[in-house]
Amino acid sequence: MNKKSSSQCNICSSKDLNVQYEGPIRMGKFGEWSEENHTIYRCGHCNIYFLNGDIIDYELSAYREMVDGCDLPGNFYKLHDKEQADKLKMLGTENVRGKIIADVGCGAGSFLDILKGLASKTIAVEPTKSFHDELRAKGHDTYSCSREALKDWSGTVDIVVSFAVLEHVENPITFLKEIKSLLKPDGFLLISTPNAEDWLLEFMPVEYGRFFYRNVHKWYFNCESLRFASEAASFKDLSIKFVQRFDISNALLWAYKRQPTGCSKFKLLNGLNGSYKHYIEDKGRSDYIYAWMYK
Image (cartoon, rainbow, N blue to C red; front, top):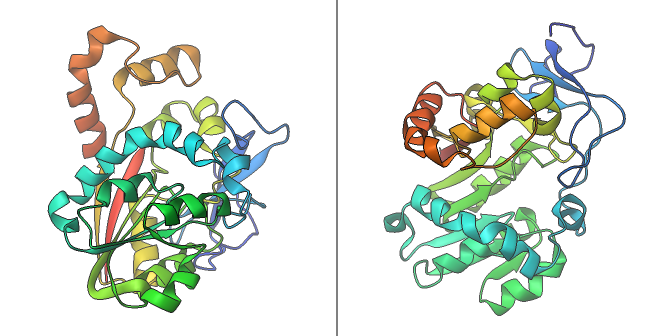
């Protein structure tokens, strides 16, 4: 789409905006869709994609219950525990031993839990207050937001991680600046976020668009907009890794059914997954991005 908008980008203030998508979007929990159309704009200057309109406030204590029903630790563990080994592999065990590590948007602390015995100190930053007692009981210093953590940890943290959070916050630049203030001079931030250049958006812009775009995601990043955000927050350097989480059977079933079906539905094709994922990642068209931002 090329329709222009008179709106202004909230990241760079540019008025060079184009409509990227217009239609229904996913609402909160899986399987719920908006009755009205929503608009996703792409900024021609910083290349950020953003949802025009209000979203559920990420810093609300009840946020997680509204989004995925995970306002209790047990529910969170069931949904997210299986993801943590891959995150540790991405970060590298050799990088965390003996370090002070903060997880911003940590939920009930699944990732921090696997760092116990490796990291010298674990810091939990999570707005959902129903998780706080559990986090403290497990030995994590616990705060509701980065601003609060800064009172105790300004300039002292070796590594901050923030997985699938940047797309939710009100102001990504402010969010990144606050995290940067937590870090030691040689510290770094590792984030993950959905890739706005996910190839299925080009293949099925309408059907996949209404699934990909959500009322809980204000921002959609690609390599260029992550670099802009990193520089705007005054990080010195940035490293990007494209990661394709969903396999070739998921793509084929999207083409056939025009709806999500999950992975490994066609066992016969499992041998092709390595080549498929490598190709998509090499083209920068994966479904996810990891970014290392160095102070």
